[in-house]
Length: 324
Image (cartoon, rainbow, N blue to C red; front, side):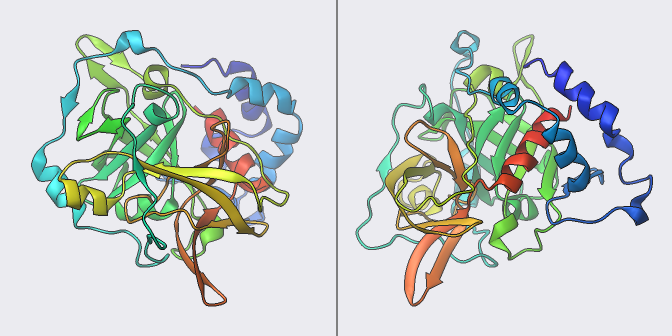
């Protein structure tokens, strides 16, 4: 677990996170970037943005720099049950945001080395209903995904996260959800706010309890408020069509350029499918610059895309990571 005491204390002195919803709620100005947790806690954007402005941004970047984890904690690889695979392959979570699509010739390649970065930080997110998404570790006990994924996968304790899965075998533990955080602006169909963070419980390996990010490592993230068209990115995750085709859960990856963007979204023709929801948009140095969430028809042309790491999105992530 990374040490966050100095930053966390600044947040606590500025506003006690546990009572934000209770005190002066009627007087507070709501924002689509207010943080809503699955436990009912509200962290208001007007408060946390003021606090972040008081923190040296370089210190924040240093605190949440990417990590390689500790492979010495490696346990014996385990496989998920075949019945789970069959159940997950036929379900989709995309009715409100469009179907993920393969555009033209399929350019996706299977990821075979899940013991290295960034592959080991990218996990298979499975709900008890059988629906699945993709998430990316960004802290010792938290991963980034789509808001529509947490809507569709049930309560936190009904989700399990498997970093770096290959052929239905997981090498980096299995982590049950503990709490969700999503923006107030997510209403089921507005892509600008289709992002969320899931906090997970430690994984028990023998007599040890292991934090996901301390084991598999974490990826960093980069604000991309300015134009991103022309930036080369890659998308990798766990597409349901490949689970259906092979009968096994593995990562698939494809690279390409951002072809269009606006202040909140990136668009590209990188092939994806249902199950890629929540996949990080990774730049050339494996920084998260957005989160993939669906397909889009723009002036009669098909693109894939999702919310970019705008200043507001970036601040949302920092705030959730600073909260214990």
